Length: 298
Image (tube, rainbow, N blue to C red; front, side, top):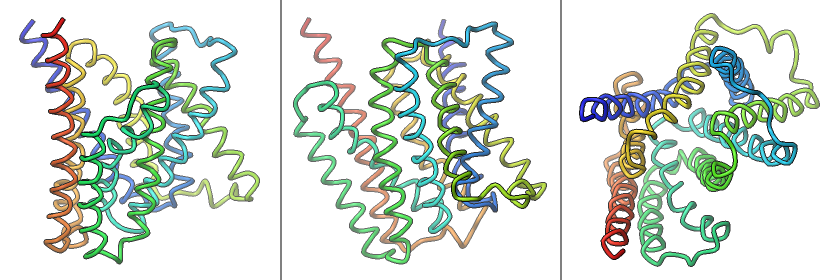
């Protein structure tokens, strides 16, 4: 049992490392954010369909789920577009640190959908995150557009996570993912078609871009999702959540190694980044301690 737990814990860290590498691939791929997301989602859909066929899983879903998955598919598509735009106009470090505000946005959105009171501690932690972002904004103003894109992406990510928290109670996780990605592709396809983007040059990519996109769509999207679902069967939600919070740290270290000077920031940036990441980890610790107290009180 302990060996299985350790194996899945190491697998979880590998998955989080892969998610951190997503930002690196976004910076390495030369095409713009919208076509990048279109290719990513399309490749992921193909790989997940292959997974369904191998596992002989049913593709059918209830009719009433179609609209829900269409809306959330559009949300995840715009989330990824703004995320990659943030990387393109700033860098990996700025985008990932700003994306950590997702926990604060979740604290605001969750009470609306789950009909609970806003937690004052979560609000206080949210204010500390804003302080960290203010420090970054103040000393890295040349990246302000990237920070704005990343904030939009973080909000959409939080909204997506909250909605999926509702859907997961009714539908299978792999079916949710498949149809959200599929409808995301449909939404982006319609946008590209109406804007006249589907030209010959759209499909003429560099060899390196094809390689990076295949890795992004297969390993970083399709595989990471399926593996993360498997891991959650063996590890506690707290362990999963706390480990996922290490994603920006993995990504920033990778970015410094791969991109060097481009990712080196003023010392004030790291002060602000430390505040944001510390608050995210503290939030996880506080939530875990409150859950333990509730269990002891029963």
